Length: 346
Image 1 (cartoon, rainbow, N blue to C red):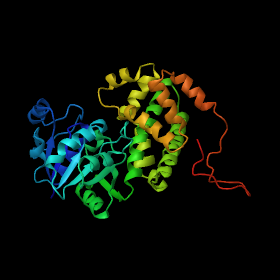
Image 2: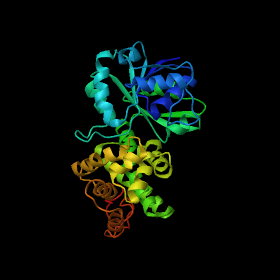
Image 3: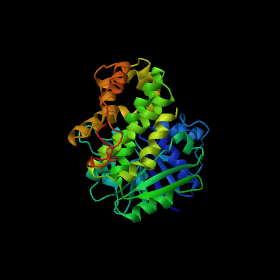
Image 4: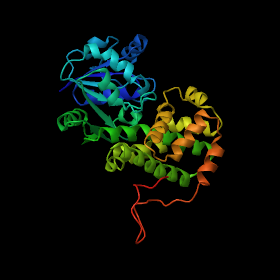
């Protein structure tokens, strides 16, 4: 049994708290909102996780120092835009040897840092890992079979996370590729917005399949250029997470995209979804990374134009479909031709 704290009481943090409790671990959930804690204590339920119940053993607190005290595992589960600020608040109470598990998905717009990098900057010397993959909170909270990947700089910490979270309904793999895991987890939300926009326009399964396959090509091009392994993007935090986020109505990014495709502004769509839409915040960062590393990412570019430049979804779709002719993969060559960069240029 491990003593664990879940820092953040949104749907994902709450689902993981339920999972960890069912795994036999001691669990404390921290929320900055006392009224939310009062609701959890009174009902043992989360309003956005229908059918899920908090086990009686889970404790709740708004005292961050108390939540972190004597814990072996700290699950940082706030929305990605609050990761740095929350990590800064955690820093005074962090004790040597505690393992931080980052479970948010996003890239910081101003610094272009992934989640684990932000935490390491705010809590110097900390042990920071990540857990990611195709894992909707609504399903994890109800014990529906799910697989994820734990990333860490050292195998021992990844395997500790693996052992802590694994159960008969939650299988965890391990990987040393923190960068690749987090890039896949973050940028797939931008592609999921595109998939939702296509749904809102009334496009079909062919369009969805095109967006998923060309989306993973864009993510892989960028990741490899930044130093991540291409194998990671063929795995759970790459194509796996991309498929589920583009296809499921549990996905807030896809739901927001559907509304944008129907004519809503990005802000109107987020207001309607009533939850943080991570892809809106990661879109600018993904575009900035593509320019920094000289990588072609036409889907990411068009999503940014729709979100921030008032381009209509219809115009964006037309421009994507009428781009110049390309080879699908420049790794595949006719005899006598030289090999080009992985996945071509868009």
